[in-house]
Length: 190
Ligand SMILES: Nc1nc2c(ncn2[C@@H]2O[C@H](COP(=O)(O)OP(=O)(O)O)[C@@H](O)[C@H]2O)c(=O)[nH]1
Ligand SMILES: Nc1ncnc2c1ncn2[C@@H]1O[C@H](COP(=O)(O)OP(=O)(O)O)[C@@H](O)[C@H]1O
Image (cartoon, rainbow, N blue to C red; front, top):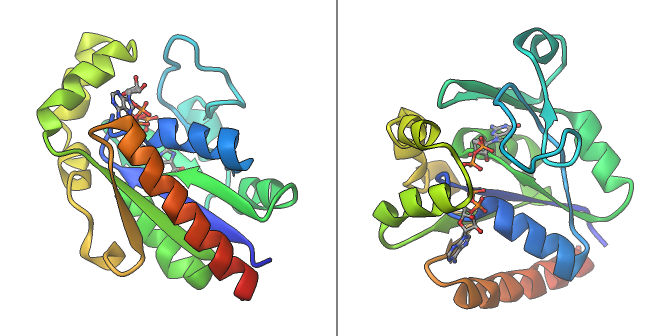
């Protein structure tokens, strides 16, 4: 079976973390842990949701790529990717679209991309608030250039990305199940 990295990308609140949990629960797909300087949200755990870093500890790590998103730093490492691949052939990683483009250039056909979108982005604010994000954090995030950028699928991903419309969760699950069936067949033939 060929190893695959499933990159889950899209704008904030479109459901990337939800999809990664679905892949874990239904397909045993572990998520590659990434690092951030963003403060923890209620319920988030260090080493489970992210490696939460100070600006100093963040700067001391080596990254495949790192980005600034809405004022905080995020970065991913080969160490985490290889740790996840040691357990299973299919693993996922949640990235902004800039990071997704970097991985698409570096990993070639080991990569599969899910791009999440919703018809009416104005409902994302409600989704973020219902997740428990503080009001001012939501406002800052929705005003960021990174959020606006990630509402569009970048041209460099159109050939590799499967677009998942996440207006309705059961409908999104059907699209993800079809994607996983196809991915399993492709990986088995390689
Ligand atoms: N390029 C890159 N993006 C990351 C990394 N880790 C997380 N992200 C992305 O950073 C953005 C902000 O993440 P987060 O603060 O958890 O907010 P959320 O998208 O609202 O859940 C999201 O688009 C994440 O997918 C990373 O290591 N590299
Ligand atoms: N199809 C959906 N319908 C309604 N709420 C959803 C749907 N998908 C995800 N959510 C909720 O929206 C919020 C944001 O989802 P999340 O997975 O954290 O997004 P992201 O990781 O892309 O920022 C969460 O509270 C999640 O439970």
